[in-house]
Length: 539
Image 1 (tube, rainbow, N blue to C red):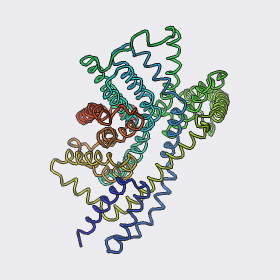
Image 2: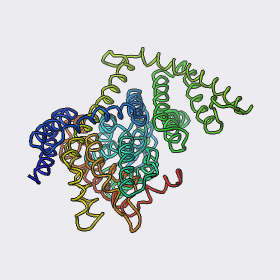
Image 3: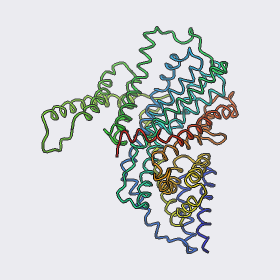
Image 4: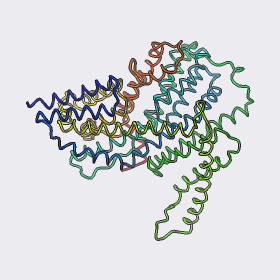
């Protein structure tokens, strides 16, 4: 009887993964499997069903968690940018800029993929968008189909690791709780907090290094296998004059880059929380979409966008709070300017809303309606899965599953290296069958408190930021690895029939090795993920 709870824990996990792999709805599978095993275990006398009474409190915590409000806002920002054809303009102009180089279209794909990752953070949308826009062009220009497919799939997964990313928002929230639990266990009852800001800062350098490694591989292919990535003849690049071309390039590149800098810079600079920065991103993306739909007469939108940037600058330079006993004359002047800028911002936003609402897409629906529906669908999926995962976690812990896993990891020979390898291996394999949401909400809360109590180096516990970045890179690698990687399914869905599935698999394998190399580099040099957070947020 003493081993019965352990058997039930294993069965709970196996049954849940089996149902998920069979295609049953995630949220209902998590909660339904957990409830089923709760009733069975209670009948067998190895589970206290009163534990389920904590479930409403968990839902209430989710409802009142300010950090998670960033999720629908970032989703809205990403969907809006996707619908405003920003990627199409960027790819077109980047192709003209780099096209005369061997491998130039590949460089364009990586650069635009990084920009879209920093703008949207939605892997499926990025892969599909890049596949629809880039793959036919690369094939037509004589690129090796495998290299083209691998480049697009790899660049599409950058949304997992380049901030601001939905994955990092959710990971940061879960790791913050796990770090507190680990510190309490170590006897520190006043621990430093770990926030989404820390994880964003920690993931920035590894994400950029990864893009550089992708580009390096493209350079190697262009040099040693020139037929795989030919240059575009100069006469076919553009019918624009150099001045017209550069103006068009700046016009397509400037607004998305400014938006990324505003969102990410306000977070890393401490001006705004991720939720507030996500709101800035959502407003900026909406105005960018309104201007892109019809640049004619878009001056109020441009003024509104500049006003948004100016308000952020004022926030950094002056104290704009009005709920103070003493306000200096300088601050009053800054507050007055901020009010005027806010009115200009409201006017630009109103015009953008009107344009996005009245403009219709090919199927006859209004763009704003499409954006709102897609945002509601993705956001509701995230939070319903979170609720289901909360039930699963309650039953799993009630059966002693967390203690079972802790005892197993601590008993492994090799200490933290073996424990980390096992956890990363399990997450990698699970990434074949279930989405990142389930892994973040189920696996991370269970294993992270255990790992964060272990010594990474003598006298120093494992850094939660480093652990989060490693997990993000690991999930990105899993989503790219044949035969079950999610990015491969997204690309297969939009690739021409002439591109075989084996061609896609062949193309991504070199990028999988690059991902593994990046994980090894980050393991050997954890400072890549910890240096910037320590610089920005010294403790």
